[in-house]
Amino acid sequence: MATSLLESYEQQYSTVTADITFHVGQIACHHGAEKQSHVRQAEKLFDEASELLEQMELEVKEQDPRERQKYSTRVKSYKTELLKLQKDMKKAKLGIDANRDELLGDDTHDSEDQRARLLDNTERLDRTSRRLDHGYRAAVETEQIGAQIMEDLHGQRQTIQKSRNRLEEMNTTLGKSSRVLSGMMRRIIQNRILLIGIGLLLVIVISVAIYFTVRRHS
Image (cartoon, rainbow, N blue to C red):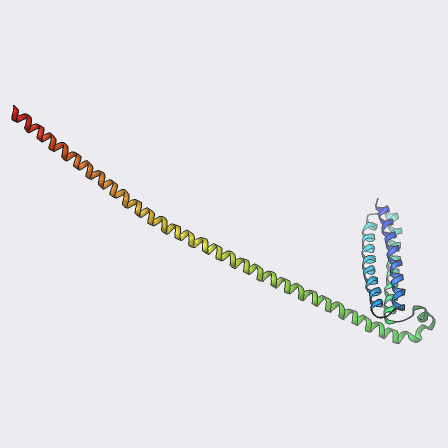
């Protein structure tokens, strides 16, 4: 299973490197926007090829020792091939003909090395600029997220404060209602006591009246 997966990676790598070779050849033949288009396509393919090599290296580690040695050698040759293609692309971007370079030998190496170093420095500056731009965008996004969180927290605080105010108002209303109910209960008790007192007084009066009435007739 691992061997078949490695073979699949190798086929993909072969296709990708063939596409890289095509675009590198086109870079040297074109200028302006069309040249930049081939450069971008080649850079994407280089990234894809590097990822495939990483996957192959992981799969090689899963092989038995005999197969591992064989595939390790292949991966190393693929890496060497990819490095050569990267150098060819740099030369193509500088407008250097690789065949002419091989024919002329060391005569053009100094100037070409200077141009290659200049290109390397330019690419390094471009990468640094992209990283800084990415970092700036990330910082701005983080700041916006932080501001949104603070705004949400402020809104939640206001909601909690409003709820607390409503609870206080309810407590105040309940306190007033409790005092009103307490007053009503006191009046009810007082009225009952008064009624009982009046009832007792009537009973006494009636009893006294009956007593004197009976005594007078006797």
